[in-house]
Length: 418
Image (cartoon, rainbow, N blue to C red; front, top):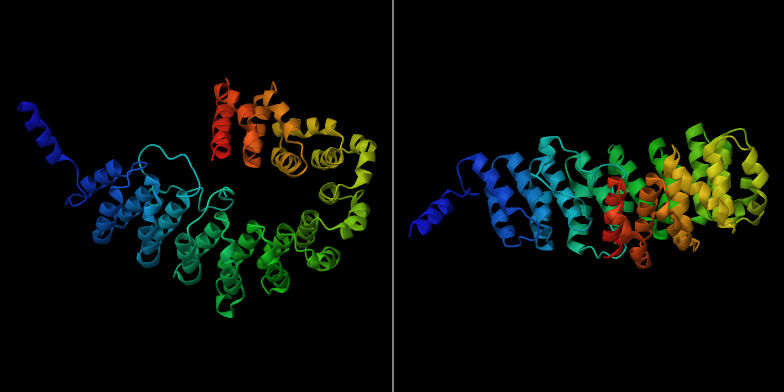
């Protein structure tokens, strides 16, 4: 009898979303917003409509993301459309993304009001896996926010989120917003849209980003130049080469060459050949990189050029070219570069060798490297390649003595096992 009374008292004392105390309402959110607690969604949704404090509304919205159930999409979409506080609307974008992009989320709920910067709505945000099906209602809510929100910050985040979700069916809406004369004053939004079109890597965006090469805004042009390369729109090659020759700034000329290196257009081979000996090491790097992606057979004879080159970024690009044309000894140079200042560059090349050039088994060798930075970097690359055949190669690293290696191995297995 005493135990039953005690339990009843504790139940009565449990924090409630209907409490007059903001601290108790916050405690209730923390208790209810746990992974898989679908039953809490309608309760939080009802409380969200009545909550006057914007920081607690943001916490409720963040809690819906943590529950990680798509039943919350209508609530999040409605919040994104109607909440008066832009930070709450930003939090809704973050929570929509969490439904599709796995991210470690432990400890107390933290929101934008806690000055926490979410990696999901910041530049260089992670991208949804290719096997994930994103609900139309989520994409449509983000597209509406990108077009109509009163805050340029929210509009920018919504555009970025569409890129993270690879919402290629929204390309016509993004293009319309980019080209709408009424959006000229919303510079940051247009810049983000141009960048998003590139991140999607869909050729359907090609004609639009080619038109944006002639935009009046220099920053939009810079993003459009790179987007042309990312989407592989080869009809714009001549325009990019003209920009390289006559561009008004060194940044624009370098960006044009970067796009050409991404374009996979054999028509640029003479240009790349002419720049292999350029005094600018970035030009040498990009020309070697562009030739490597074209499986340029002349790269087989780059050994002397590689041995004489002093700049590590150029050496990596030359190594990539030789590896891409069959000299796999140079994969070792790229693997070692994972423990260097050029690790990001090396990751791109190793990813492409494993993903597109059939050298995944060669990469597996370096999961057993004596250097933990190489093991960790290669685990990340192999996870991003996403071939399930790598699972058994990665699994032993979950018991690695190095915590960074373990973290990357666990993240890779999560991607490989979806």
